[in-house]
Length: 82
Image (cartoon, rainbow, N blue to C red; front, side):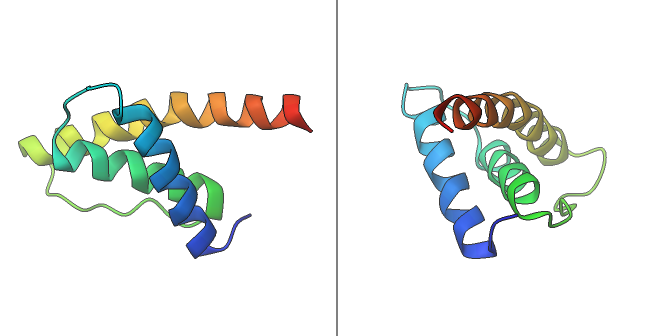
């Protein structure tokens, strides 16, 4: 498990890589993406930020789903590099 600072740094790095290709996403989507990476890398629980039934809630959880795929790719790269 990573420290909270290391997890936040990794989340920012992976988000920068993911969204640098011109893929326009909302702030809640990007927040969900980053929070999932932090959760997986540090062991912290995934926070519920938005109320269910809102557009922001849907975007947040869509971002977490995207992050699951990116996280799996990251772990695979790390295993190959090790």
